[in-house]
Image (cartoon, rainbow, N blue to C red; front, side):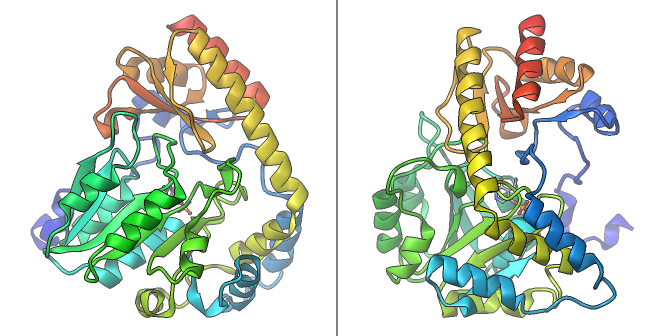
Length: 362
Ligand code: PMP
């Protein structure tokens, strides 16, 4: 039956949970495992989100609102953008499917930097597009100048991941603005801001600012990280009317389920929860970075809820040993950086366990 598959599907790796290591696969089945591989929020959802989700379950026999009006309205007010300019879907992953399915024809080129989030490559490939991966700078930042040089008449889309996954690096607002302004009209710009809520820089300008200035860019965000709803699957895109329209054409009618929709509304209301998560993330990141540097590893400054570490040796073995101890991290061999490892910031206790285990192993 593989004969029947689309050619573009043949080259893809199947998604298997815990594909990073064999031990991780076994460990993910265990209940007491410490998950530091997928940048989730370790503190659970906000109490307000839980309350809203429980309420939504009572109406589980009814289809959700296909337009997600309440959430679009709330986001619109929050950002000062027309609610009509949002698409809500089943996680930011689904938004990436929609963006590429709406814009990419076979043979079109999609330019972005690598290492970055693997879904850009996969979705481009599925649609018959051509991923053009430009190396990041030596300090692991998106290289916008090199991306600009890679643009030609076949380029249909550029993607900036800011902050970047897995490196945790950010660009200045002015750099991104300048790049967006220089782009030729036949190129659709995407700004993936899955981790933007963790940036702790005074006056930092985001994609919302660029949209309000009238710049054509599709901004992508998620409730999986700061808002602690990764298991619910809710993310969104926001852009001007023209850019957002085709996403509504290709999306599923009920792309965001009732419970997720309720949870997202509840999470947006819970300012205390957000502040608590941000404070703890910052404290724990500082603790981890200091301890790992003291252990002799090189750790990049990160603006997210994870860190990217040069362990000075192949990290597959370290990741396997950690998995044996019930700690799952992400070795960066999938990005062809075998000495690097991405670690999500856990709770204080989880981070202590990680540091202790690393001291034993390395
Ligand atoms: N973009 C980036 C850069 C990510 O790291 C992730 C999740 N790891 C996503 C998008 C997808 O997030 P979601 O959970 O909303 O699908």
